[in-house]
Amino acid sequence: MRALISADMEGATGVTCPDDCRPGSPQWDRFRRLLTGDVNAVAAGFFAAGVTEIVVNEAHASMRNILIEDLDPRVRLLTGRHKSLGMMEGAHEHPALVAFVGYHSAPGTPGILSHTFLGSEITDVRLNGRTMSEGYLNAMLAAEFGIAVAVVSGDDHTCADASDYAPSSWRVEVKQAVDRYSAVCRTPAETAEELERAARESVPAASLSELPESPYRCEVEFLGTSSAKMASLVPTVELTSPRRVRFEAASIERIYECFIVVSAMAKAAAEAVYG
Image 1: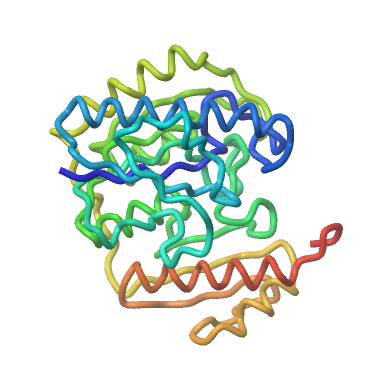
Image 2: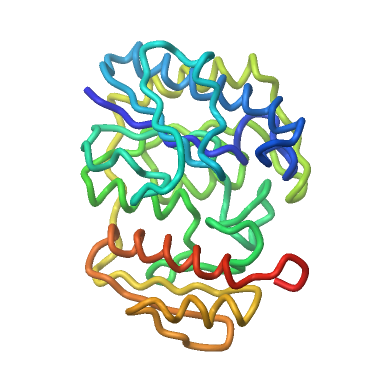
């Protein structure tokens, strides 16, 4: 049995502020070790439950955060950017299970470092009317590929979101948000034990998430009008108001790919100070 681990960083053990997961900062160098520890704990649980092959897909920022020298030697690491399926690269190999490690909640929620793809430029995003966190989008893509979401880890808002889109998953709350940049955090020793147990126990019960009805409609609201206008240059993307765009597709995979392009265009159109 094969499994995929999609590893983000904002929801990793101990992370509470941008510097904790900004590549190159002293804090990032510290917390990438904790992220690696979270991944190892989930991998250990999967292997104990009979999983025979695990690919860990780096899914945060530069996608070069995990310390390969500290990883469980039984896993393989998919590292680096420019992947057609981004956070879910590896789904084309059709693993049976996926774990979302170090995830966070959607923009507009009070979760730690909440956002979807862009830290501040996207202010609201919805898939068929439902708030679209990265976890929700990734779970829908997983369902389309026949992959069950087994484990989700992050703060309390992340876990509450996952209880809706992946009710059969084991959710591990590694911290409780106080605000977007502060949390009551559990220690690495405690979270590692729970992550390993969650992964081990989740394997027999994991089931597919329920997809919304096709066609799929994605609506994105931006902080700045320039981002929306630039995003609307993408074929099939419609400008519906000065700060909002909309696009449709017959598959989640096409929605995913279009959202990657829309996000890239929007980011390129934003200025550092005014957005």
